[in-house]
Image (cartoon, rainbow, N blue to C red; front, side):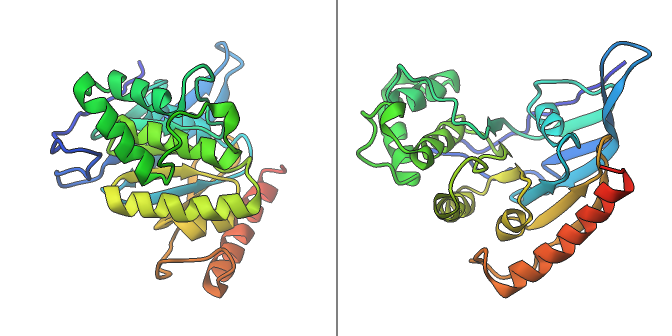
Length: 269
């Protein structure tokens, strides 16, 4: 029997997401295995993976393609269940993808308002709350635009505002900047870091870009090739704000990349 424990923690209600008010990890993954396919020909995506994420921590996951990073995010979001082991997430989660996945027939404000409505925000409060979120992601005055009128970076800002509209305390991000050009990605790193610091969210950020992980994260977890396990972790003690081309970021990125290469070679990938 699979088991999934999603524990709702009491949070202080406010205009936006808040850090959890309880002691202990925001996320606990304990001995989780996830398999796909029929009996007798199982494919193991995750194998007895365990990890914790502290309240307000920015945790990055790196690993080769197919190592189960996205599967893990789906388990944390409650979109899937493990074959064995348990997942405990304290508070609401919000999931942000590589593609913005905005509704093209809705305006920017309409996309955010829909998320607010689904989060139970009263109609009378939605306009002001949407305006606050647009200001937070630096899209003030863009509420009437449709997604096709925006650049890729702007669409991801709207997706971030929509994620924040769900009043979550845990933000799950699946390569959200992977399809963007380098300059836009760098600017959005700054915006995400600012929003994270303002809101106190716990963030789990999946990326193939090791420098991006070091630029953003408090901690970088290295996952093995399939099946996914946590095989190493690196604390990022580099002072903020950081830049992708900082010497310390470059140095630690090189160490993590070498570790990742070792893991990929070990599996013959």
